[in-house]
Image (cartoon, rainbow, N blue to C red; front, side, top):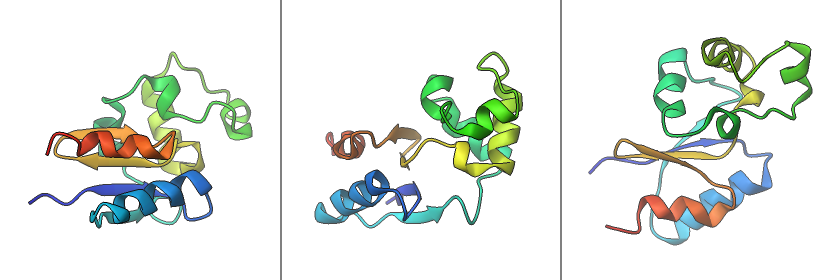
Length: 115
């Protein structure tokens, strides 16, 4: 069985809640603390295919404006997320070729509802 992956920030309450919800349902994901180990550009490209760009990137982070980023330039945004991972929306759970942002945290269970 494929193991789910959570792109997790332990300092984020939504991310902690999403991880707790998974565990309460007997799901133990691989935990990627993306601030310590940022995903590479290929991983970001794959993940980003599941979302609108404005959902995937934290446009309200000061770095988004400081870097002069625009939602019109996906490649540049992915490159900058790989260098500034706090721009990545969180938490993201990936499983069986799908991915979901856990906002609200309960939403992560939508990946598993049909199993």
